[in-house]
Length: 250
Image (cartoon, rainbow, N blue to C red; front, side, top):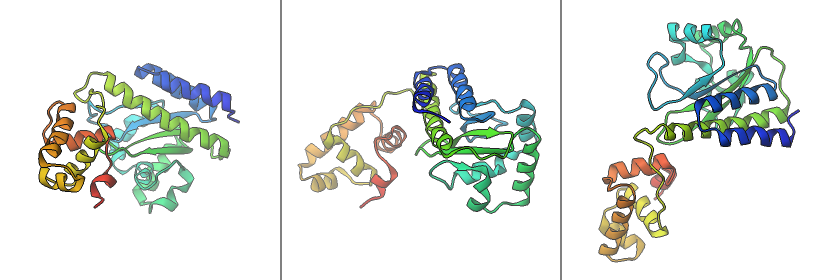
């Protein structure tokens, strides 16, 4: 049973993690506390050619990882496929109800049994502008965890992935740019730029002069390092300043 004090301690470890080693240790602790035996967390990228801007941490058996890479199983992983259809965590036993399992899917799941991956709980992570990812806690038995443990696993998976994104930014990649603070009017202008509006249309919609609308847009561009409008929208989506819903709404 995961009590609140224990859960707070686990989440604090994820919040405090600033290195991949610290995050790995936090995931190990959470895996044990939650009653699981292995974990895998990271972006879904080609494991044979890892992306520099992706993170992946796992305690899975190294022989299983090699097995997956050699056979290209990461392309057809049924758990990964199911995660693209779900907004929240799910048990592996429910995958058959989420996606239609092919013979190859069933083969992958069957072979995983021999590496102690009998059951698991996977938390999907969907962030616009980034690789899709998951955090999975796996077990060597098919005993179903308590609802409390699954609730705690959902939180731990979410916090772990957030820590991973923070660590990637600390690596010093080109994406390591602070999210700029924008005024309410600049936010309005940003959304309208994302909807394909020019300065005149933005002025009409905001009820301001064309020059004022232009200045709002230029203020956003300056905040993003004088980014051109297409790149500006990509950055704003990546940073979570706007969502696809904001841009598609009319």
